[in-house]
Image 1 (tube, rainbow, N blue to C red):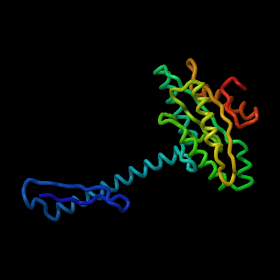
Image 2 (cartoon, rainbow, N blue to C red; image 1 turned 90 degrees about the horizontal axis):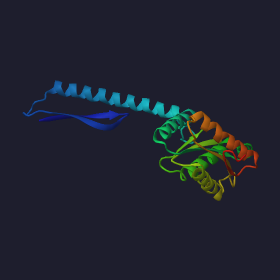
Image 3 (tube, rainbow, N blue to C red; image 1 turned 90 degrees about the vertical axis):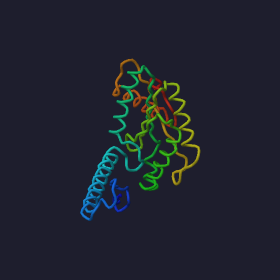
Image 4 (cartoon, rainbow, N blue to C red; image 1 turned 180 degrees about the vertical axis):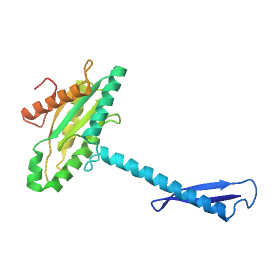
Length: 219
């Protein structure tokens, strides 16, 4: 014989708790009440676990773009640098900053600016590999970790992404461009040093007129 009770999480059936016995009519009303309480407790535990996981995701995600936020992105960069050092592999880091983004907010409002940023993020994500990681590290600044890539490969990826973002207008802003700086992990450098070099390359790209990609040392 068997007795079963549904496990409900937030009002929906998540699964079932089933008890079985080798003899017929093995379960009485009290057994079924105990099984029901067990199902309720299990549903509560699953709901609490899911809620905690959602809080963690929210704490590490940018609510506008869905990308990892600054803290989460920096954590991934630290892990990527450590992994590259252990394996003796290449690693590149890119910083992207949308050109004249303040004008979009000033002319069309912040909701329009948010829509533009979401679309840019979508186009960038379409250019990444499964092993890459994007993150929103500032207002209109996006970081891109490229495991296994050297400076040349990362710069080529940046140029492809720049072409993808600017190819079609994004209403109501029109054609959107970005500047990018690229750096490669070298010797025993840590995540902070790599971050600083990519950031300097981005600053140089913006200083040189925007809508361009510069490698570290080219500014």
